[in-house]
Image (cartoon, rainbow, N blue to C red; front, top):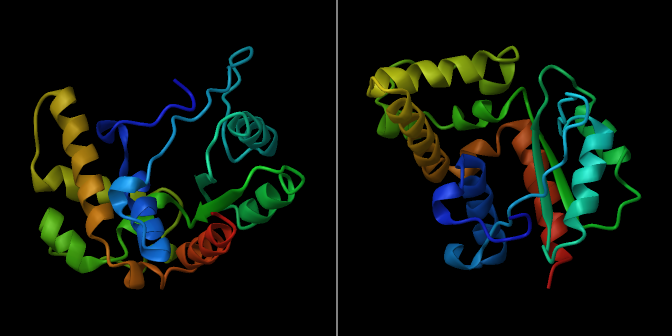
Length: 201
């Protein structure tokens, strides 16, 4: 249900990464950090509600104001749009809900490629990853999926989905945050999150 704490098995790699960041910044034990199930925005006439569309993001943030969340964290991919963060920030600046809008260049998977040691440890990667933020849209996603599939191929769709999920979480949990901060889009996220956390009790 929207506003209810997400159970541990519902958390994805982004939750684990953000949890580590908050733990580091505020010295809060990871177990004391909880994530609330987001509000669901209804589909109207088959329209896909994407968070990189300002009006859809505003609807989600307005719904979040109804719950007792300390902070709304929105993570979207740039997908080649260098203005996405500015447009989303400007388009929601009048809302009172405390929030951080993070835009990964070009996608969240690029952040998961930032630490080669984590890739070696978790996926036995033998290639040297390219500079993550230099990759064209979609390439980090494709490359990471190939490495995950090569790591331990499985047959059934259920096994594949769980394998991909657990590997992505493992990487997000092992990433060196200082190395990751060399990626400009993550560094901006880190700065914005730090500023938002200063305003929290």
